[in-house]
Length: 161
Image (cartoon, helix red, strand yellow):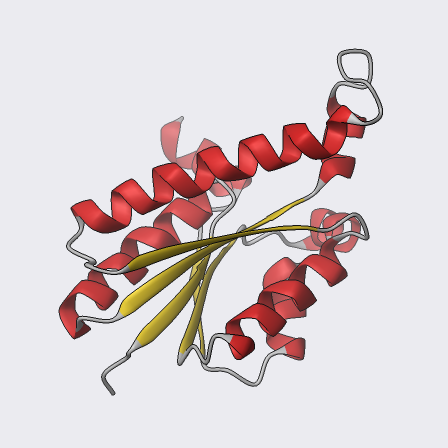
């Protein structure tokens, strides 16, 4: 199948970069357009550095970081030969389920024919505590999905030792 429009979730992580690289090659080969999506989550900033930010600044910090991720991702996609790259930044304050739903809804609205994302490959207790964004997207989407599995932190440490 030749794809015409890929929607790629990017969050700045190593696994989303792996997914982006794979999707960019696929888009360049099929001359597809690509939309990069980042769902900014201000609550992540509340947990990380509450002493550094004013309450009203959490959203602007998340949006700023999201825009940086999208700019970098666009550069990578264009360097890989993708001619048409769009960017979409959204905000979710409700957590991973809402973030996944926003991604799925946006991809469907844009009439994407492939949704691409990376997964961290967490298992066991980490999966139970952190949940799986990719798994949530799978349950909510009717679009074809390409999920690129990243190396889990445990496996990455084992390989370098």
